[in-house]
Length: 584
Image 1 (cartoon, rainbow, N blue to C red):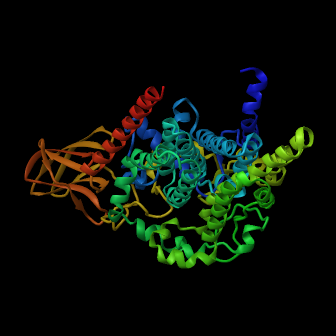
Image 2 (image 1 turned 30 degrees about the horizontal axis):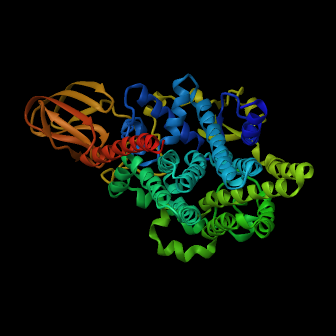
Image 3 (image 1 turned 180 degrees about the vertical axis):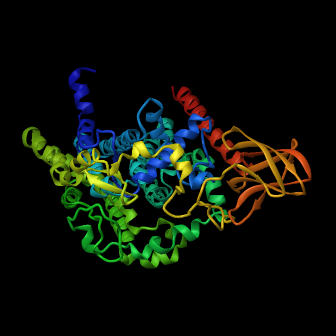
Protein backbone atom coordinates (compact mmCIF):
# COMPACT_ATOMS: atom_id res chain seq x y z
CA UNK A 1 0.00 0.00 0.00
CA UNK A 2 1.50 3.35 -1.07
CA UNK A 3 1.30 6.59 0.94
CA UNK A 4 -1.67 7.90 -1.05
CA UNK A 5 -3.73 4.78 -0.46
CA UNK A 6 -2.80 4.81 3.22
CA UNK A 7 -3.88 8.45 3.54
CA UNK A 8 -7.14 7.68 1.75
CA UNK A 9 -7.79 4.86 4.18
CA UNK A 10 -6.90 6.70 7.39
CA UNK A 11 -8.05 10.28 6.88
CA UNK A 12 -11.57 9.77 8.36
CA UNK A 13 -9.95 8.60 11.59
CA UNK A 14 -7.76 11.71 11.52
CA UNK A 15 -10.94 13.78 11.61
CA UNK A 16 -12.11 11.75 14.61
CA UNK A 17 -8.77 12.35 16.35
CA UNK A 18 -9.12 16.08 15.70
CA UNK A 19 -12.55 16.02 17.37
CA UNK A 20 -11.05 14.27 20.41
CA UNK A 21 -8.26 16.86 20.60
CA UNK A 22 -10.85 19.65 20.50
CA UNK A 23 -12.71 18.14 23.46
CA UNK A 24 -9.58 17.35 25.50
CA UNK A 25 -7.44 20.39 24.69
CA UNK A 26 -7.70 21.78 28.26
CA UNK A 27 -7.17 18.49 30.07
CA UNK A 28 -3.43 18.15 29.99
CA UNK A 29 -2.42 19.02 33.50
CA UNK A 30 -2.35 16.96 36.68
CA UNK A 31 -5.83 18.06 37.79
CA UNK A 32 -9.03 16.07 38.07
CA UNK A 33 -11.73 16.84 35.51
CA UNK A 34 -14.70 18.68 36.93
CA UNK A 35 -18.06 16.95 36.80
CA UNK A 36 -20.83 15.80 39.09
CA UNK A 37 -19.22 12.42 39.81
CA UNK A 38 -15.54 13.14 39.21
CA UNK A 39 -14.52 12.97 42.88
CA UNK A 40 -16.45 9.70 43.28
CA UNK A 41 -14.72 8.20 40.26
CA UNK A 42 -11.35 9.26 41.67
CA UNK A 43 -12.01 7.55 45.00
CA UNK A 44 -13.21 4.38 43.28
CA UNK A 45 -10.09 4.34 41.14
CA UNK A 46 -7.80 4.75 44.14
CA UNK A 47 -9.53 1.83 45.89
CA UNK A 48 -9.31 -0.41 42.81
CA UNK A 49 -5.67 0.46 42.24
CA UNK A 50 -4.76 -0.35 45.86
CA UNK A 51 -6.59 -3.68 45.68
CA UNK A 52 -4.90 -4.72 42.42
CA UNK A 53 -1.46 -3.78 43.71
CA UNK A 54 -2.10 -6.02 46.73
CA UNK A 55 -3.04 -8.98 44.53
CA UNK A 56 -6.84 -8.65 44.60
CA UNK A 57 -7.47 -8.54 40.85
CA UNK A 58 -11.23 -8.20 41.17
CA UNK A 59 -12.25 -6.79 44.56
CA UNK A 60 -15.91 -7.81 44.60
CA UNK A 61 -15.81 -6.67 48.22
CA UNK A 62 -13.86 -3.38 48.29
CA UNK A 63 -12.80 -2.97 51.89
CA UNK A 64 -11.71 0.67 52.03
CA UNK A 65 -15.17 2.19 51.64
CA UNK A 66 -17.50 3.01 54.55
CA UNK A 67 -14.64 3.71 56.97
CA UNK A 68 -12.97 0.40 56.13
CA UNK A 69 -16.15 -1.68 56.56
CA UNK A 70 -16.36 -2.48 52.85
CA UNK A 71 -18.60 -2.13 49.83
CA UNK A 72 -19.90 -4.42 47.08
CA UNK A 73 -19.36 -1.70 44.48
CA UNK A 74 -17.34 -3.73 41.95
CA UNK A 75 -19.66 -6.70 42.40
CA UNK A 76 -22.71 -4.76 41.16
CA UNK A 77 -21.38 -1.67 39.38
CA UNK A 78 -19.99 -2.33 35.89
CA UNK A 79 -16.21 -1.99 36.38
CA UNK A 80 -14.60 -1.94 32.91
CA UNK A 81 -14.04 1.83 32.77
CA UNK A 82 -11.98 1.66 35.97
CA UNK A 83 -9.92 -1.27 34.67
CA UNK A 84 -9.12 0.71 31.52
CA UNK A 85 -7.97 3.55 33.78
CA UNK A 86 -5.90 1.09 35.81
CA UNK A 87 -3.88 0.22 32.70
CA UNK A 88 -2.64 3.82 32.59
CA UNK A 89 -1.96 3.81 36.33
CA UNK A 90 0.10 0.63 36.15
CA UNK A 91 2.41 2.25 33.58
CA UNK A 92 2.96 5.24 35.86
CA UNK A 93 0.19 7.79 35.31
CA UNK A 94 -1.27 9.48 38.44
CA UNK A 95 -4.90 8.62 39.15
CA UNK A 96 -6.27 11.98 37.97
CA UNK A 97 -4.31 11.85 34.71
CA UNK A 98 -5.19 8.19 34.17
CA UNK A 99 -8.90 9.01 34.45
CA UNK A 100 -8.54 11.65 31.75
CA UNK A 101 -6.53 9.33 29.53
CA UNK A 102 -9.24 6.68 29.85
CA UNK A 103 -11.94 9.24 29.06
CA UNK A 104 -9.99 10.44 26.01
CA UNK A 105 -9.49 6.83 24.90
CA UNK A 106 -13.24 6.30 25.19
CA UNK A 107 -13.91 9.36 23.04
CA UNK A 108 -11.44 8.17 20.41
CA UNK A 109 -12.79 4.61 20.33
CA UNK A 110 -16.37 5.84 20.07
CA UNK A 111 -15.52 7.96 17.05
CA UNK A 112 -13.40 5.26 15.40
CA UNK A 113 -16.02 2.54 15.78
CA UNK A 114 -18.76 4.87 14.55
CA UNK A 115 -16.57 5.77 11.56
CA UNK A 116 -15.99 2.08 10.80
CA UNK A 117 -19.73 1.42 10.84
CA UNK A 118 -20.64 4.46 8.72
CA UNK A 119 -17.88 3.69 6.22
CA UNK A 120 -19.30 0.24 5.51
CA UNK A 121 -22.83 1.56 5.15
CA UNK A 122 -22.17 4.74 3.14
CA UNK A 123 -18.48 5.53 2.46
CA UNK A 124 -15.35 7.41 3.53
CA UNK A 125 -16.88 10.88 3.92
CA UNK A 126 -19.74 9.38 5.89
CA UNK A 127 -17.17 7.80 8.20
CA UNK A 128 -15.48 11.12 8.93
CA UNK A 129 -18.77 12.98 9.41
CA UNK A 130 -20.45 10.35 11.58
CA UNK A 131 -17.33 9.80 13.73
CA UNK A 132 -16.83 13.52 14.42
CA UNK A 133 -20.54 14.12 15.05
CA UNK A 134 -20.63 11.19 17.49
CA UNK A 135 -17.62 12.46 19.48
CA UNK A 136 -18.87 16.07 19.59
CA UNK A 137 -22.57 15.40 20.19
CA UNK A 138 -23.80 17.63 23.03
CA UNK A 139 -25.09 14.79 25.19
CA UNK A 140 -21.77 12.97 24.77
CA UNK A 141 -20.05 16.16 26.01
CA UNK A 142 -22.54 16.34 28.90
CA UNK A 143 -21.49 12.86 30.00
CA UNK A 144 -17.80 13.72 29.75
CA UNK A 145 -17.58 17.36 30.88
CA UNK A 146 -20.68 18.10 32.97
CA UNK A 147 -21.65 14.81 34.64
CA UNK A 148 -18.35 12.91 34.46
CA UNK A 149 -20.59 9.90 33.92
CA UNK A 150 -17.56 7.70 33.45
CA UNK A 151 -19.24 4.41 32.58
CA UNK A 152 -21.92 5.90 30.36
CA UNK A 153 -19.38 8.04 28.51
CA UNK A 154 -17.24 5.00 27.69
CA UNK A 155 -20.32 2.98 26.74
CA UNK A 156 -20.69 5.26 23.70
CA UNK A 157 -17.82 3.27 22.14
CA UNK A 158 -19.28 -0.20 22.38
CA UNK A 159 -22.68 0.26 20.69
CA UNK A 160 -21.22 1.02 17.22
CA UNK A 161 -18.63 -1.74 17.73
CA UNK A 162 -21.40 -4.27 18.41
CA UNK A 163 -23.37 -3.09 15.36
CA UNK A 164 -20.25 -3.18 13.15
CA UNK A 165 -19.54 -6.74 14.28
CA UNK A 166 -23.10 -7.91 13.69
CA UNK A 167 -23.11 -6.27 10.24
CA UNK A 168 -20.00 -8.16 9.12
CA UNK A 169 -21.10 -11.41 10.72
CA UNK A 170 -24.44 -11.43 8.91
CA UNK A 171 -23.36 -9.89 5.59
CA UNK A 172 -20.03 -11.69 5.14
CA UNK A 173 -20.50 -14.74 7.33
CA UNK A 174 -17.35 -13.64 9.15
CA UNK A 175 -16.47 -15.38 12.40
CA UNK A 176 -14.01 -12.60 13.27
CA UNK A 177 -16.73 -9.98 12.92
CA UNK A 178 -19.03 -12.16 15.00
CA UNK A 179 -16.41 -12.07 17.76
CA UNK A 180 -16.15 -8.28 17.38
CA UNK A 181 -19.91 -8.02 17.86
CA UNK A 182 -19.74 -10.28 20.91
CA UNK A 183 -16.95 -8.18 22.41
CA UNK A 184 -18.92 -4.99 21.78
CA UNK A 185 -21.93 -6.39 23.62
CA UNK A 186 -19.82 -7.81 26.45
CA UNK A 187 -17.95 -4.52 26.89
CA UNK A 188 -21.28 -2.68 26.93
CA UNK A 189 -22.50 -4.90 29.78
CA UNK A 190 -19.21 -4.51 31.64
CA UNK A 191 -19.11 -0.72 31.23
CA UNK A 192 -22.62 0.53 32.00
CA UNK A 193 -25.53 -1.68 33.01
CA UNK A 194 -28.23 0.87 32.15
CA UNK A 195 -26.90 1.71 28.67
CA UNK A 196 -26.66 -2.02 27.97
CA UNK A 197 -30.30 -2.48 29.00
CA UNK A 198 -31.72 0.35 26.88
CA UNK A 199 -29.48 -0.58 23.92
CA UNK A 200 -30.89 -4.12 23.71
CA UNK A 201 -33.87 -3.15 21.48
CA UNK A 202 -31.54 -1.21 19.15
CA UNK A 203 -29.22 -4.18 18.77
CA UNK A 204 -32.19 -6.47 18.13
CA UNK A 205 -33.54 -4.04 15.50
CA UNK A 206 -30.10 -3.86 13.91
CA UNK A 207 -29.89 -7.66 13.65
CA UNK A 208 -33.35 -7.81 12.07
CA UNK A 209 -32.35 -5.16 9.53
CA UNK A 210 -29.02 -6.71 8.47
CA UNK A 211 -30.53 -10.22 8.43
CA UNK A 212 -33.36 -9.02 6.20
CA UNK A 213 -30.98 -7.20 3.87
CA UNK A 214 -28.06 -9.62 3.68
CA UNK A 215 -29.12 -12.94 5.15
CA UNK A 216 -31.86 -14.08 2.80
CA UNK A 217 -29.68 -16.46 0.75
CA UNK A 218 -27.74 -18.21 3.51
CA UNK A 219 -28.67 -19.00 7.07
CA UNK A 220 -25.04 -18.81 8.26
CA UNK A 221 -24.97 -15.00 8.47
CA UNK A 222 -28.06 -14.49 10.65
CA UNK A 223 -26.97 -17.37 12.88
CA UNK A 224 -23.58 -15.72 13.38
CA UNK A 225 -25.41 -12.52 14.28
CA UNK A 226 -27.34 -14.42 16.94
CA UNK A 227 -24.06 -15.95 18.16
CA UNK A 228 -22.62 -12.46 18.51
CA UNK A 229 -25.46 -11.50 20.83
CA UNK A 230 -25.40 -14.72 22.81
CA UNK A 231 -21.61 -14.69 22.93
CA UNK A 232 -21.59 -11.17 24.32
CA UNK A 233 -24.03 -12.10 27.06
CA UNK A 234 -22.07 -15.21 28.00
CA UNK A 235 -18.67 -13.49 27.90
CA UNK A 236 -19.93 -11.03 30.51
CA UNK A 237 -21.77 -13.71 32.51
CA UNK A 238 -19.14 -13.66 35.26
CA UNK A 239 -20.33 -10.14 36.10
CA UNK A 240 -24.01 -9.82 35.30
CA UNK A 241 -25.31 -13.20 36.47
CA UNK A 242 -24.19 -12.77 40.12
CA UNK A 243 -25.06 -9.07 40.08
CA UNK A 244 -28.57 -9.67 38.73
CA UNK A 245 -29.20 -12.72 40.93
CA UNK A 246 -28.16 -11.05 44.17
CA UNK A 247 -29.89 -7.67 43.92
CA UNK A 248 -32.49 -8.90 46.42
CA UNK A 249 -29.73 -8.93 49.07
CA UNK A 250 -28.94 -5.20 48.86
CA UNK A 251 -30.77 -1.87 49.14
CA UNK A 252 -30.56 -1.13 45.40
CA UNK A 253 -34.29 -1.13 44.64
CA UNK A 254 -35.06 1.36 47.39
CA UNK A 255 -31.95 3.45 46.81
CA UNK A 256 -31.79 3.60 43.02
CA UNK A 257 -35.43 4.39 42.28
CA UNK A 258 -36.59 6.71 45.08
CA UNK A 259 -36.41 10.42 45.94
CA UNK A 260 -34.13 12.24 43.44
CA UNK A 261 -33.95 9.13 41.24
CA UNK A 262 -37.69 8.91 40.53
CA UNK A 263 -37.81 8.77 36.75
CA UNK A 264 -40.94 10.90 36.37
CA UNK A 265 -39.04 13.95 37.67
CA UNK A 266 -36.57 13.82 34.76
CA UNK A 267 -38.56 13.65 31.55
CA UNK A 268 -37.42 16.04 28.83
CA UNK A 269 -39.67 18.74 27.39
CA UNK A 270 -39.97 18.81 23.61
CA UNK A 271 -38.38 22.25 23.28
CA UNK A 272 -35.31 21.08 25.18
CA UNK A 273 -34.34 18.79 22.29
CA UNK A 274 -33.85 21.97 20.20
CA UNK A 275 -32.80 24.49 22.86
CA UNK A 276 -29.15 25.55 22.36
CA UNK A 277 -28.54 26.00 26.09
CA UNK A 278 -25.28 24.72 27.58
CA UNK A 279 -24.57 24.32 31.29
CA UNK A 280 -22.90 22.17 33.92
CA UNK A 281 -25.78 21.94 36.40
CA UNK A 282 -28.13 19.13 37.28
CA UNK A 283 -31.45 17.65 36.23
CA UNK A 284 -34.58 18.98 37.94
CA UNK A 285 -38.33 18.75 37.64
CA UNK A 286 -39.52 21.13 34.95
CA UNK A 287 -38.05 22.60 31.75
CA UNK A 288 -35.31 24.71 33.39
CA UNK A 289 -32.67 22.06 34.00
CA UNK A 290 -29.09 23.07 34.64
CA UNK A 291 -27.75 20.66 32.02
CA UNK A 292 -28.66 20.61 28.31
CA UNK A 293 -30.76 17.92 26.68
CA UNK A 294 -30.42 19.15 23.10
CA UNK A 295 -29.73 16.73 20.29
CA UNK A 296 -27.55 19.44 18.74
CA UNK A 297 -27.92 22.00 15.96
CA UNK A 298 -25.48 20.23 13.62
CA UNK A 299 -27.26 16.93 14.16
CA UNK A 300 -30.66 18.44 13.46
CA UNK A 301 -29.35 20.11 10.28
CA UNK A 302 -27.77 16.93 8.98
CA UNK A 303 -30.83 14.87 9.93
CA UNK A 304 -32.91 17.25 7.82
CA UNK A 305 -30.44 16.71 4.98
CA UNK A 306 -30.81 12.96 5.36
CA UNK A 307 -34.44 13.30 4.28
CA UNK A 308 -33.24 14.46 0.85
CA UNK A 309 -30.72 11.63 0.81
CA UNK A 310 -33.54 9.20 1.57
CA UNK A 311 -35.43 10.47 -1.48
CA UNK A 312 -32.41 10.49 -3.82
CA UNK A 313 -30.50 7.36 -2.80
CA UNK A 314 -32.77 4.37 -2.99
CA UNK A 315 -30.11 1.89 -1.81
CA UNK A 316 -29.70 3.85 1.44
CA UNK A 317 -33.35 4.11 2.34
CA UNK A 318 -33.52 1.12 4.65
CA UNK A 319 -30.45 1.99 6.80
CA UNK A 320 -31.63 5.60 7.01
CA UNK A 321 -35.08 4.41 8.05
CA UNK A 322 -33.45 2.35 10.82
CA UNK A 323 -31.49 5.42 11.95
CA UNK A 324 -34.65 7.51 12.06
CA UNK A 325 -36.53 4.83 13.98
CA UNK A 326 -33.74 4.82 16.57
CA UNK A 327 -33.70 8.62 16.85
CA UNK A 328 -37.47 9.04 17.10
CA UNK A 329 -37.86 6.09 19.46
CA UNK A 330 -35.09 7.35 21.76
CA UNK A 331 -36.47 10.91 21.87
CA UNK A 332 -39.93 9.52 22.54
CA UNK A 333 -38.63 7.48 25.50
CA UNK A 334 -36.97 10.60 26.91
CA UNK A 335 -40.17 12.66 26.58
CA UNK A 336 -43.24 12.80 28.83
CA UNK A 337 -45.30 11.08 26.14
CA UNK A 338 -43.65 7.77 27.01
CA UNK A 339 -44.77 7.85 30.67
CA UNK A 340 -47.32 5.00 30.20
CA UNK A 341 -44.54 2.72 28.94
CA UNK A 342 -42.38 3.61 31.95
CA UNK A 343 -45.25 2.79 34.29
CA UNK A 344 -45.98 -0.50 32.54
CA UNK A 345 -42.37 -1.77 32.35
CA UNK A 346 -41.31 -1.66 36.00
CA UNK A 347 -37.61 -2.32 35.38
CA UNK A 348 -37.35 0.96 33.46
CA UNK A 349 -37.38 2.67 36.86
CA UNK A 350 -33.73 1.61 37.24
CA UNK A 351 -32.85 3.81 34.25
CA UNK A 352 -33.61 6.69 36.67
CA UNK A 353 -33.26 9.46 34.08
CA UNK A 354 -35.29 9.21 30.85
CA UNK A 355 -32.82 11.57 29.18
CA UNK A 356 -30.29 8.71 29.20
CA UNK A 357 -32.03 7.59 25.99
CA UNK A 358 -30.20 10.48 24.29
CA UNK A 359 -27.27 8.05 23.98
CA UNK A 360 -29.32 6.12 21.42
CA UNK A 361 -30.61 9.28 19.74
CA UNK A 362 -27.03 10.49 19.27
CA UNK A 363 -26.06 7.11 17.81
CA UNK A 364 -28.85 7.11 15.22
CA UNK A 365 -28.50 10.81 14.38
CA UNK A 366 -24.71 10.64 13.91
CA UNK A 367 -24.99 7.62 11.62
CA UNK A 368 -27.67 9.31 9.51
CA UNK A 369 -25.59 12.52 9.42
CA UNK A 370 -22.77 10.61 7.75
CA UNK A 371 -24.97 9.75 4.78
CA UNK A 372 -25.38 13.45 4.00
CA UNK A 373 -21.65 14.05 3.67
CA UNK A 374 -21.25 11.00 1.43
CA UNK A 375 -24.24 11.96 -0.72
CA UNK A 376 -22.79 15.46 -1.25
CA UNK A 377 -19.47 13.95 -2.28
CA UNK A 378 -21.09 11.53 -4.70
CA UNK A 379 -23.49 14.06 -6.24
CA UNK A 380 -21.15 17.04 -6.52
CA UNK A 381 -18.52 15.67 -8.84
CA UNK A 382 -14.77 15.65 -8.37
CA UNK A 383 -14.44 19.34 -7.48
CA UNK A 384 -17.44 20.70 -5.64
CA UNK A 385 -18.51 17.35 -4.25
CA UNK A 386 -15.44 17.09 -2.04
CA UNK A 387 -15.78 20.70 -0.89
CA UNK A 388 -19.44 20.35 0.07
CA UNK A 389 -18.85 16.99 1.72
CA UNK A 390 -16.00 18.40 3.82
CA UNK A 391 -18.24 21.27 4.91
CA UNK A 392 -20.71 18.67 6.20
CA UNK A 393 -17.88 16.73 7.85
CA UNK A 394 -16.61 19.83 9.66
CA UNK A 395 -20.02 21.23 10.62
CA UNK A 396 -19.93 19.80 14.14
CA UNK A 397 -16.58 21.46 14.99
CA UNK A 398 -17.59 25.17 15.05
CA UNK A 399 -21.13 24.43 16.25
CA UNK A 400 -20.07 22.43 19.32
CA UNK A 401 -16.67 24.01 20.09
CA UNK A 402 -18.21 26.40 22.69
CA UNK A 403 -19.44 23.36 24.64
CA UNK A 404 -15.96 21.89 25.09
CA UNK A 405 -14.68 24.18 27.87
CA UNK A 406 -13.45 21.97 30.68
CA UNK A 407 -13.82 22.30 34.42
CA UNK A 408 -11.45 20.91 37.04
CA UNK A 409 -12.04 19.82 40.61
CA UNK A 410 -10.56 21.32 43.80
CA UNK A 411 -11.22 20.62 47.46
CA UNK A 412 -12.42 23.78 49.24
CA UNK A 413 -10.95 23.64 52.74
CA UNK A 414 -13.29 26.16 54.37
CA UNK A 415 -16.44 24.45 53.05
CA UNK A 416 -15.12 20.89 53.45
CA UNK A 417 -16.53 20.24 49.99
CA UNK A 418 -15.58 19.87 46.36
CA UNK A 419 -15.83 22.62 43.77
CA UNK A 420 -15.59 22.58 39.98
CA UNK A 421 -13.80 25.47 38.30
CA UNK A 422 -13.17 26.44 34.70
CA UNK A 423 -9.73 25.64 33.44
CA UNK A 424 -8.29 29.18 33.68
CA UNK A 425 -9.57 29.76 37.26
CA UNK A 426 -8.45 26.31 38.36
CA UNK A 427 -4.81 27.06 37.63
CA UNK A 428 -4.94 30.20 39.80
CA UNK A 429 -6.97 28.73 42.66
CA UNK A 430 -4.83 25.58 42.88
CA UNK A 431 -1.95 27.73 44.14
CA UNK A 432 -3.98 29.32 46.95
CA UNK A 433 -3.91 27.87 50.51
CA UNK A 434 -7.70 27.61 50.80
CA UNK A 435 -7.85 24.97 48.06
CA UNK A 436 -6.38 21.49 47.85
CA UNK A 437 -5.67 19.28 44.86
CA UNK A 438 -7.75 16.06 44.92
CA UNK A 439 -4.78 13.96 43.90
CA UNK A 440 -2.93 15.14 47.01
CA UNK A 441 -5.88 14.57 49.36
CA UNK A 442 -7.49 11.36 48.12
CA UNK A 443 -5.25 8.48 49.15
CA UNK A 444 -6.19 4.99 50.24
CA UNK A 445 -5.36 5.94 53.84
CA UNK A 446 -7.67 8.97 53.65
CA UNK A 447 -10.50 6.85 52.20
CA UNK A 448 -10.10 4.23 54.95
CA UNK A 449 -10.08 6.91 57.66
CA UNK A 450 -13.26 8.65 56.47
CA UNK A 451 -16.84 7.65 55.81
CA UNK A 452 -16.42 7.54 52.04
CA UNK A 453 -19.42 5.99 50.33
CA UNK A 454 -18.97 4.04 47.13
CA UNK A 455 -22.01 5.71 45.50
CA UNK A 456 -24.17 8.78 46.06
CA UNK A 457 -26.65 6.65 47.99
CA UNK A 458 -26.46 3.34 49.85
CA UNK A 459 -27.19 1.41 46.66
CA UNK A 460 -25.04 -1.65 47.27
CA UNK A 461 -25.17 -2.02 51.05
CA UNK A 462 -26.44 -5.42 52.25
CA UNK A 463 -29.89 -5.51 53.82
CA UNK A 464 -28.26 -6.58 57.09
CA UNK A 465 -26.67 -3.13 57.49
CA UNK A 466 -29.19 -1.09 59.47
CA UNK A 467 -26.70 1.35 61.05
CA UNK A 468 -23.66 2.56 59.13
CA UNK A 469 -20.50 2.88 61.27
CA UNK A 470 -19.10 6.40 61.01
CA UNK A 471 -15.52 5.75 62.12
CA UNK A 472 -12.92 3.10 61.25
CA UNK A 473 -12.67 0.15 63.65
CA UNK A 474 -9.92 0.23 66.28
CA UNK A 475 -9.24 -3.45 65.56
CA UNK A 476 -10.44 -5.53 62.65
CA UNK A 477 -11.74 -8.31 64.93
CA UNK A 478 -13.81 -8.08 68.11
CA UNK A 479 -14.73 -10.83 70.61
CA UNK A 480 -18.02 -10.16 72.35
CA UNK A 481 -17.45 -12.55 75.25
CA UNK A 482 -13.68 -12.62 75.38
CA UNK A 483 -10.40 -10.99 74.42
CA UNK A 484 -8.71 -10.63 71.06
CA UNK A 485 -5.04 -11.46 71.59
CA UNK A 486 -3.67 -10.90 68.06
CA UNK A 487 -4.99 -9.97 64.63
CA UNK A 488 -3.12 -10.68 61.43
CA UNK A 489 -3.96 -9.66 57.87
CA UNK A 490 -3.08 -12.67 55.72
CA UNK A 491 -4.02 -10.97 52.45
CA UNK A 492 -6.81 -9.00 50.84
CA UNK A 493 -10.09 -9.78 52.64
CA UNK A 494 -8.34 -12.52 54.68
CA UNK A 495 -7.77 -12.16 58.44
CA UNK A 496 -6.72 -14.41 61.30
CA UNK A 497 -7.15 -13.73 65.01
CA UNK A 498 -6.21 -15.45 68.26
CA UNK A 499 -9.04 -15.06 70.78
CA UNK A 500 -9.52 -16.12 74.39
CA UNK A 501 -13.24 -16.57 75.11
CA UNK A 502 -14.51 -16.46 78.70
CA UNK A 503 -17.90 -17.71 77.47
CA UNK A 504 -19.40 -18.90 74.16
CA UNK A 505 -20.26 -16.03 71.85
CA UNK A 506 -19.67 -14.39 68.50
CA UNK A 507 -16.31 -13.24 67.18
CA UNK A 508 -16.93 -10.50 64.62
CA UNK A 509 -14.91 -9.11 61.74
CA UNK A 510 -15.44 -5.38 61.22
CA UNK A 511 -16.67 -5.89 57.66
CA UNK A 512 -20.24 -5.92 56.37
CA UNK A 513 -21.61 -9.44 55.99
CA UNK A 514 -22.45 -10.76 52.55
CA UNK A 515 -22.51 -14.23 50.94
CA UNK A 516 -18.91 -15.15 50.27
CA UNK A 517 -17.61 -14.42 53.76
CA UNK A 518 -16.47 -17.70 55.28
CA UNK A 519 -14.89 -18.55 58.63
CA UNK A 520 -12.72 -21.27 60.13
CA UNK A 521 -12.40 -21.89 63.85
CA UNK A 522 -9.30 -23.91 64.71
CA UNK A 523 -9.17 -25.05 61.10
CA UNK A 524 -12.82 -26.17 60.94
CA UNK A 525 -15.26 -24.45 58.62
CA UNK A 526 -18.11 -22.66 60.40
CA UNK A 527 -21.12 -20.78 59.10
CA UNK A 528 -20.85 -17.00 59.26
CA UNK A 529 -23.66 -14.94 60.78
CA UNK A 530 -24.66 -11.29 60.99
CA UNK A 531 -23.65 -9.44 64.14
CA UNK A 532 -25.21 -6.18 65.39
CA UNK A 533 -27.23 -3.54 63.57
CA UNK A 534 -24.07 -2.65 61.64
CA UNK A 535 -24.40 -5.98 59.80
CA UNK A 536 -20.91 -7.23 60.60
CA UNK A 537 -19.56 -10.67 59.69
CA UNK A 538 -19.31 -13.01 62.69
CA UNK A 539 -18.93 -16.65 63.73
CA UNK A 540 -19.95 -18.41 66.94
CA UNK A 541 -16.95 -19.52 69.04
CA UNK A 542 -16.88 -21.64 72.21
CA UNK A 543 -15.11 -21.05 75.51
CA UNK A 544 -11.32 -21.06 75.57
CA UNK A 545 -8.52 -20.06 73.26
CA UNK A 546 -9.10 -20.36 69.50
CA UNK A 547 -7.72 -19.33 66.14
CA UNK A 548 -10.40 -17.72 63.98
CA UNK A 549 -9.97 -16.96 60.26
CA UNK A 550 -12.23 -14.88 58.02
CA UNK A 551 -11.96 -14.87 54.24
CA UNK A 552 -14.12 -13.47 51.46
CA UNK A 553 -14.28 -16.04 48.69
CA UNK A 554 -16.49 -17.02 45.78
CA UNK A 555 -19.84 -18.80 45.85
CA UNK A 556 -21.13 -21.66 43.64
CA UNK A 557 -23.16 -19.17 41.59
CA UNK A 558 -20.18 -16.88 40.98
CA UNK A 559 -17.94 -19.82 40.13
CA UNK A 560 -20.49 -21.16 37.65
CA UNK A 561 -20.85 -17.73 36.01
CA UNK A 562 -17.06 -17.42 35.70
CA UNK A 563 -16.80 -20.89 34.14
CA UNK A 564 -19.49 -19.92 31.60
CA UNK A 565 -17.47 -16.85 30.58
CA UNK A 566 -14.22 -18.82 30.30
CA UNK A 567 -15.83 -21.59 28.21
CA UNK A 568 -17.46 -18.99 25.95
CA UNK A 569 -14.15 -17.18 25.38
CA UNK A 570 -12.42 -20.46 24.50
CA UNK A 571 -15.30 -21.57 22.27
CA UNK A 572 -15.27 -18.29 20.31
CA UNK A 573 -11.51 -18.47 19.83
CA UNK A 574 -11.60 -22.11 18.71
CA UNK A 575 -14.52 -21.48 16.37
CA UNK A 576 -12.73 -18.55 14.73
CA UNK A 577 -9.54 -20.60 14.17
CA UNK A 578 -11.34 -23.69 12.85
CA UNK A 579 -13.68 -21.65 10.68
CA UNK A 580 -10.81 -19.78 9.10
CA UNK A 581 -9.02 -23.02 8.21
CA UNK A 582 -12.16 -24.62 6.82
CA UNK A 583 -13.02 -21.59 4.69
CA UNK A 584 -9.48 -21.53 3.32
